[in-house]
Length: 257
Image 1 (tube, one colour):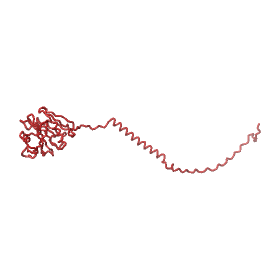
Image 2: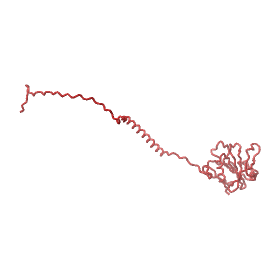
Image 3: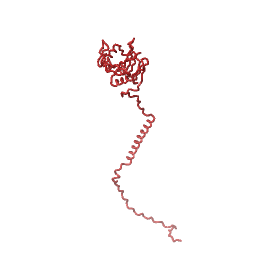
């Protein structure tokens, strides 16, 4: 057995506590100065806010772009309807229609922006629709048939007597005739122009540049004799375009027999 020292109570002697060695005082922390590269960087919170704003903006743009694309597929924009055609003169006048008068045996073509009406048993007129206020009651185009022996001249639009018609046939070009007398007679002076062929027949062309209450309208008439009657093809035009429409109208005129 090991030889151990004991005190009077038979217990081993108490251990003597050792005094811990003193630690040197800690040095105060020296603040580190950020490098130039570190100091130039923005704070993390600012960068995070900018990213959020960019994401929101980009998402909004994408959303409206996709929405517009879907909306155009569901409801595609309507294309303006093209209803005009070009006549031989190059004037846009709309779709061309054909009017045929079996009683007086003629046919003629006219643009569908005109409204056709058989004004009297002997006359057919073609007016602009809707009718401009400035035009009053004057049609753009008309055809009147004047039989050689007519019992009711009031049933003919712009009726002319056989005597007056024959005077124009005999009149030299660029000469004028006053077809009415009395009050407002100055508004009924017609000048003869150069003749033109109509359906293979020479047509006598006369013109009145001073139409009563015409607001600047010019009344041109073409006289063509056939089938025991005089065909009066006329127009009240106010522009070069309307005159071109009248010329096309005359060129399309033809007899059924």
